[in-house]
Picture 1 (cartoon, rainbow over the protein chains, first blue to last red):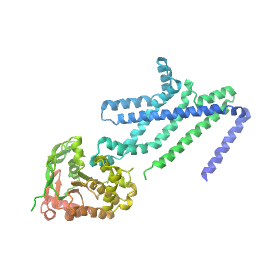
Picture 2 (picture 1 turned 45 degrees about the horizontal axis):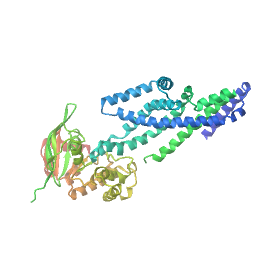
Picture 3 (picture 1 turned 45 degrees about the vertical axis):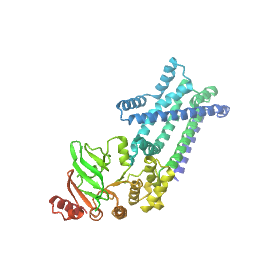
Picture 4 (picture 1 turned 135 degrees about the vertical axis):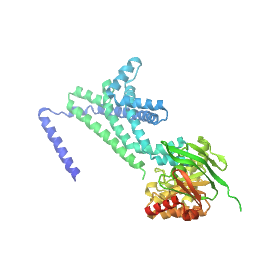
Length: 240
Length: 248
């Protein structure tokens, strides 16, 4: 009931703002319809970019988490340094460094420059997620593995990783949502993602406000769907 | 009468944590069929002793010999030894993402390289013997503490160990659930299983054990039969028993 009430209030507020803005800004939605394909293209690119970057970020994250939990001091320090660097660096700067920095030395494709920037950057966060997951596995269960006579690697693969992975799913899905949002920054290197396409549509049609409203809606739809899928996956894999 | 074989021999096990000596030169032999209750006040080193035996805690000094051979501190030697020694934890420590049957099958698959199918068959039999044949496909969190501990015992027994170490197997249980676990342990002793039980339950010591080892400040201060122990006139044992009955 309260959700319905809230919905009505929000819808009312939106309608009110829209109609007040309409008085001074003539909304023209019809010009946008011709450009729906550009939005679709942009969404596909954004999704491709995000999914590939997440897959790579997971690999980076596993490496970072293992390094930070390692017994070898050098590896542990390297992992800490990595996380420190990328967590204290704006993503936009990382993108500029990779595309214009490395790009001036070697030829880097825009798309892959975007993928590399995002996966290096998000990898630091994913690493922290995995590390928290590994640390959350009860130490008694690892001990039980030891007492059975399992090797360290068997304890990791049979006891620790399956549970750490399940524990990591909700924050990992959250990170994918963040990644989709962060990916809008790659538009600065003219990678044809959703944000850049919306800007193109805006300048071509002069319906700037409309284009950005559609842009916002597209992101909301994508991120909400990912969250929903994540919740389903989480429930599927939950340990009773 | 046939002399029973010595299965386990501890020589001068010593362990300190932060300069605090927890075990001091603990030595004793365990013979086949022995059921030893390790008693002592909190902090006397009981759990540390048990953990030092199978190297969950590495002792600072001292040796463990298994069937006449010293257990080396190498990966393979420790693994081989552990696969012959069952360990039952106070807090069960079942693997939470695995079903009950797989919890019990796991050591067979990973240590004895059995197939999952064969291991599950053996696990099913073992779980039947502790009265959990109807819980095979449940997860640990769906079981009561007493049931979880019986799974813990089945997991230790499925390897058919030469000796079972039990670390306060009933202390984490509701009083109403202690009985079901006690019954299983009593059955093991009647089957002639060699066991070392760290416990606060005087009942264990009186009725199940054939030997009591009393630890005080990390040292063996008595090693005798339960009858001798409970009839003892020794001041420290009397004091311990009074404290114990005060708690209970």
